[in-house]
Amino acid sequence: MNTFVWLVRREFWENRAIWIMPAVIGIVLMLAALFGRVHLDFPVVTPDQTLVVGGTVLFAFGVVFFLVMSIYSSWYLLDCLYADRKDRSILFWKSMPITDTATVLAKLFTGLIAIPAVYFAAADATTLLVSFILSVRTPSTLGAALWQPDLWLQLQALWTYLIITTAIWYLPFAGWFLLVSAYARRAVMLLSVAVPLALYLLERWFFGTHVFGSAIAERAMDYAAYAFRDMSGHAGWVTTIIDNNAITTPRSVWQLLDPAGFLASGATWAGVLVGALFILGAVQLRLRRAEA
Image (cartoon, one colour):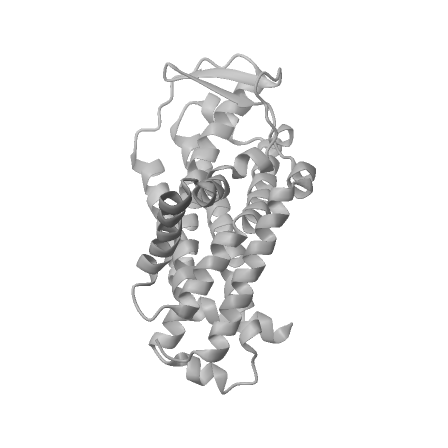
C-alpha cells in the first residue's frame, strides 16, 4: 500500500498540470465573480425556488471544473505510459522493485480517482469563495440562496457520486487509453481514434451492421441513463424564472441518484470486464516494451 501511495505521488510530481489547471480555473472564476456582471433577475417566491437559484449558480461553476477534468483525465491516461517510454524514465522505474502491474494501476487510479478528487477539492474551494464574493456584491436574495447547508451537502454527494460512477462506467475508455499509451510509438491520440474508426468502417462495409459503433456511442452517451433516475413527469420538480428563462430542476439531488440501479445494470459490469481486459493488455505491453 505504501508503494502504491508513492507511485501516485510520483504522478503528481511529474504532472504538475494536475493541480495547476484547477487552480488557474479557480482564479479565473473568482476574478469573474469579482469584476463580472453578477446581477440576476429572478422573482423568488418559495424556499424551493431559492434552492433552485443557489443550486443553479453553484452547479454552473462545478460544471466548468468537471468538463476540464474530463478532458485532462482522458489526455493523461492516453499519454502516461507513452511518456515513460519516450523520455526513457521507464528504464529507471523497471530497475526499482516495483511491478509493472502496480505502475499501471497507479496511473489508472490517478486518472480516474485522484485527478477528479483534486478538481472536486478545487471546485469546492472556488464555490465557497465565489459564494462569498457574490453574496457581498449582489442583493440579499441571491446571497441567501447561496448559503444553504442542505444545498452544499447535496453538491458534495453529487461530486462524490460522479467520481465513483464515472470511474466505473468509463473504465473501458480508460483501459483503451492505457492500452494505446503502452503500445504506441508515436501519434498516440491518432491511434486511439483510428483503430475504433477502422473497426466501425470494416463492420459497415463487410456486414452492413453498426453493433460496434452503437456500443461505443452507448458507452459514451448513456451514462446518465444508468446512473440517475428518470425523473420525467415527476412531481418533484421546481420551475424558476431567471433572466426571463425558465429553469426546471428537481427539488433535491437525492431524488436523482440511483446507485442501486447503476450497480445492478448488466451494462455496468460488462464495461468493467472490457476495461479490465484492456488494462491487463496494457500491463502485458509494459512488461515487454521499454522504448517509444
